[in-house]
Amino acid sequence: MKSIRPHLFALVAGAALLAGCATPPPPDPAAELSYCYKTNKGRVIACTQAPAPSLNADADAKRFTPDPNALTVYVVRRNWGDGRHFIKVQADGGAAVETLPNTMVRMKLKPGRHTIGFEFEGRSQTTTVDGKAGDVRFVRIDGMVWSWKSTFEWVAEPEAAIRERALKARLVADVAAR
Image 1 (tube, rainbow, N blue to C red):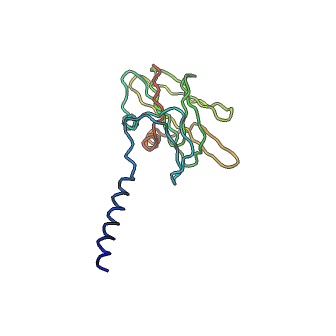
Image 2: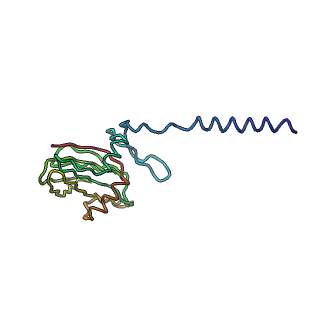
Image 3: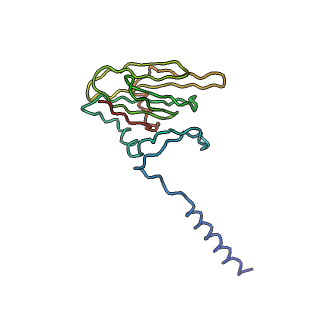
């Protein structure tokens, strides 16, 4: 009976050691990879086709540092009822970037007035953002998905509230249109 204990201890220690080796390494914070939206149980629902900015760029964007040469606009998509739909956002009819739930886009634009828009199910929606160089603005898309209907619209919300949502969102595109 006494000879079983050292073997059992060695077996448990070996299993613990192997379990540590099976743990995946942390993601590379400089890697630009596709972003995947997951359920709260970790099941992947949808992934962006284009690579998202790195985790380092995401952390930098969340400092909300003004660019002295541009108007910086954050388009935030974060709502409890949002679904898996891709929503493409664009500024002034330029190149469109896709968003998923719990994501944001940072746009560095020329100072002045700009139209930010998206389209969902053939219906276009726009909002206007106005600012000078060094200004930082926040706008939010509110998505609500039900089994019988899905809606997406621009929401008028205080910038401080949208900034809080942006801190919990993932940067999926960094657009510079100067």
